[in-house]
Length: 187
Image 1 (spheres, rainbow, N blue to C red):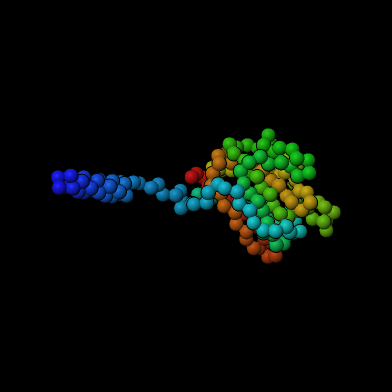
Image 2 (image 1 turned 135 degrees about the vertical axis):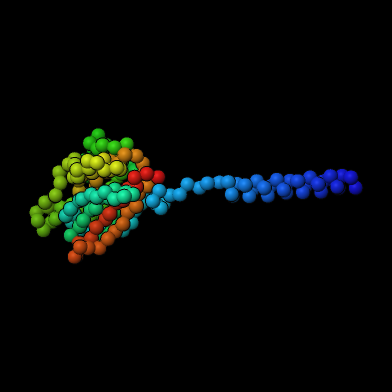
């Protein structure tokens, strides 16, 4: 009888400790809210298919919570693979990291050419060319063209650090389409 009473008392005390630990953890834990509500992550993102619509413009923009790179095409494009890591020039396979600024490197592979076959294969940028002025951008440091080969176009985007990013595919303007890369200013 005495052992049973002691075990019952011990069970009540342990149950109380478990309950108080659970409630104090739930009440005492402060979860940091996501920066600007951003929950994108930094894992590689890929989607879409190969397209023949040529690249016509690359531009950048600064926003309150992220920096943006826009790749615009003269027709429908929805194919890309974007992730952190070394980026290589198309055709030659030379590393682009020596030509980019920043603490991390985003590898951009667009499933569309940077040349227009209807205009004698004209390419809008030279391999290794810095395509944007990013002075005073909080996150973006560099956007460098890595070439276009067999319908794929490559860019290296230097960023301040490995930060969350998202990719959007947008229609327009007109018959054009855009692959948009947003990189958060912080986690």
